[in-house]
Length: 242
Image (cartoon, rainbow, N blue to C red; front, side, top):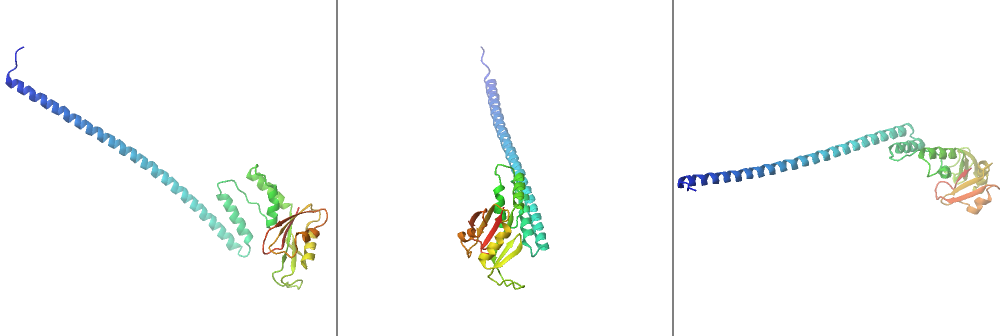
């Protein structure tokens, strides 16, 4: 093979060097382009994650706002009840309980009662294996069948002169039925409550003037006594017959 002239050989080498340099430059540009592409994808993923986080935070903020508005409405309802019943706490307590049930995430219901012993006895109808609606009806029916009363020391002298502060006063079904000596008042109150009853629940207060045996001695024959230490300061005995 004949040798190329020297000047042609030099020109060819320059062309090859330029081509190699161009290829290297293209590879460098391609690598930069790939890096930019990967960076752009990373930014896109980051933006997507930020958007998802922002959407989640927005949803939580809306939930908190809805809860706040609901609690505000509940507070407004309770304040209305307080304003309409300034001297009667019962409607206020019932309104609070009903609103608490509405705001509860679990099934809940209000069963109105008028005394602690009534609620205690009615709860015996509660069945943890049954739904809330069934239990509300069962406990309510049980409460309606109870007869409640109590004996307490009078807080002040009677305007009609029947008793003075510190004397015993007995109530049955919300009505004053006896007063005077603690033992006699308890016996008279029990006579009003337990007629036809089978069970008497007695919750003793903080410092009753008669002990459990004294109470048992005044319970009519045929009536079973369930005696509990309640420790309430205002009532010597809270009574419930069923």
